[in-house]
Image (cartoon, rainbow, N blue to C red; front, side):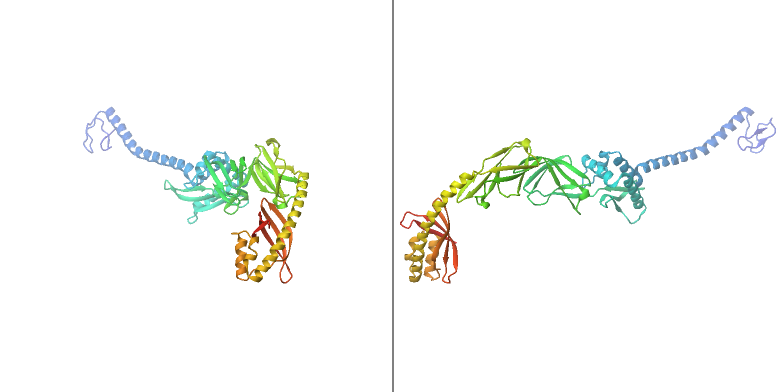
Length: 457
């Protein structure tokens, strides 16, 4: 039995060459069967191809979506940061944390990684970041949240920042920054590297100065500091664990020595005149005072000076080698006690003689001054005064205006002479009988009086 290739009508008469239904010509049986099979295959292929193409496209889209999700979904973004921190990949962490306003270098990123692991812990960090990302991704209103340490300090800001491929929320991971400040005891210049570049910061004594902004971490930055006492090497250390609300204070850790100076045989010297000289700088002396710091890699010299009765005395100079310098170095220097005693004895004899001379001078001066006041005659007293001095002008003016105070029974309390200049503390008595003490400055003169008054306080 044959089938018409055109209308599929079954032809029972195998001898006929035409289809009784449509009239189509029918070839021999072999050719007809071949054409029929070919046509059937073509029809089936035409039906399958569109479905196959559609299926391939769907599979391809699924693969692309899966790939995009694996690298661009919020969870995937969080996972990339988690893996980078967990594997100490400071380069990747630096890249992910860098923003337009704050560049994070690899050194800073490595410090941040250590801080996260110590102060947050990887288990808590992984849980917190995934939970935070999930909540932000689902929320229509919240755009940011902070991850915190176990102590409640913010260490990472997670925020939604646009979309990726119009499908996924883009997550930004930004560590908070704080200003790091130093407060040196003297004017100081600091030199260190920040973001791979050399940086210099000049800080005034006893004033907080910012050295830069940093992300959370426990830092020990190689640094050099320069003061009038020398150049120091060491570290600028600061830990965000002990940060203030907006700043972090630096703890300096430099190779430095502080010096405590003890003075012997200085009891006879004026306490206020005692000075300590270390290298080429001089300081007021104090029993408990600590001087410095000074670099431990340089020798230092120490001496002291003090005054008594107008003369300055100096101790021996001691040199301390660099290898003998410690964090707290004690140094003792001594005055020559005999030398000081001999000078004081000699000076007291001179002072007694000077007191006697000044006693005579002030006795004569008081008589002349009181007469000049009584008679309103400046000429009676002007010879005791240095012409052009403040005393000369003041006494003349007061006598003229009858406002000058009398000087009664003057007593020399103390004298101190330096060259031709003499300072004398003189006690007199007012008209009410009460003592009045004044300080006089005089100069030696070659006339019969021997002295001229220059100034009265």
